[in-house]
Image 1 (cartoon, rainbow, N blue to C red):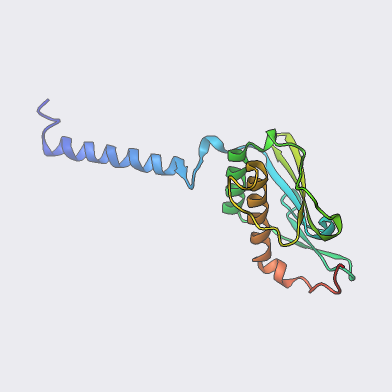
Image 2: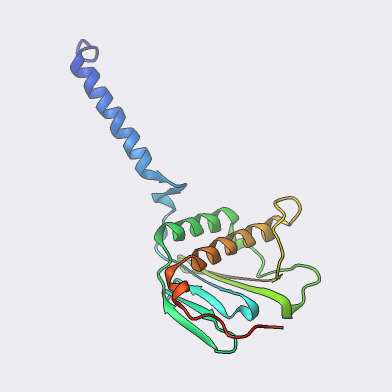
Amino acid sequence: MKFLFSWKGLVIAIIILIVLVLIMIDVRVNGYTRYDRVNEFDFELRFGTYGMQNVNTFEDTITKDLIMAGTMSSDYVFPEYAKRHVYKMLRDMDIMNFPSRLELPYVDAEKTNCLTLNVVIDGAEKTVECLVPWGYKLRGVGTTPDQLYQFLTLTEYIENRVYKSGEWRDLPKSVGGYL
């Protein structure tokens, strides 16, 4: 008992406490725990008019719709931290229990962002599709159905990561436009 209240005992107790805190910090980084890691996680998001653009982590590519000039693909590795964030979003939204098609009323298929997300998590595959009018703005939980809001938030996050990448900027500009 005398050892516990000595300087040596106090120093050892502080070291043990620091080690435990460091282990806890290591286990929980950005809301992603070791126990959340999966053996297999990849996704492909098709987006844009007619769903001609995509990001594909299965093949580490992006594809840009050049409209009248066809499409062009480039090598692109989705950043690991962003991929972890996508996985966390998918887990939080319980993507495997989503409907295969999310509907918005009064959608004109000619003037839409065609979103198709295909996800594989540890061998389980899920595909969710949604047509979103150009200019459609997220209105927040409560005014937009929760699943639709979660899905659009996720796809917007992925699209923004792609648009900001150097690989995307290096692809040629689109020629022409859709009516």
